[in-house]
Image 1 (cartoon, rainbow, N blue to C red):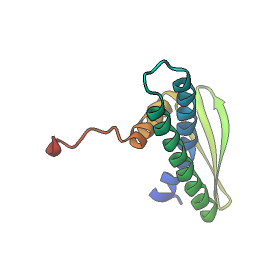
Image 2: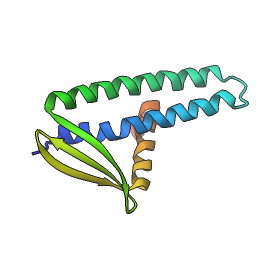
Image 3: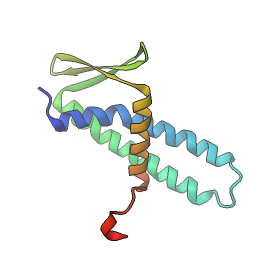
Image 4: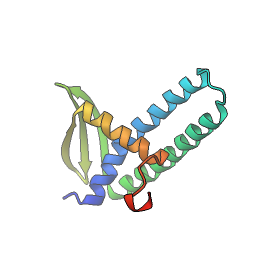
Length: 122
């Protein structure tokens, strides 16, 4: 029913708004931080927020085209619940908040290109 590409779209739809929210909060903290040069950091975060927004727009468009809808059902018993409707079929997805936090951090690292260089480049 769900192929790997659809699963990836759903995952991105869940995580990209969280990533954007983290960047927006961090940008507010950077504005009040006592750094010698705040402009480069603010510029980087602002461009990253725009990139996340563009990516989220693409994901929403693809999901809509495929007839896939994702609804946030809130939290229950320590899990974040999502309802996924795929061309009329319903499926629930449960995620642990602490694992979601780690995944959001991974997305942030990807957007900021902070991955280590491959060993053959060092």
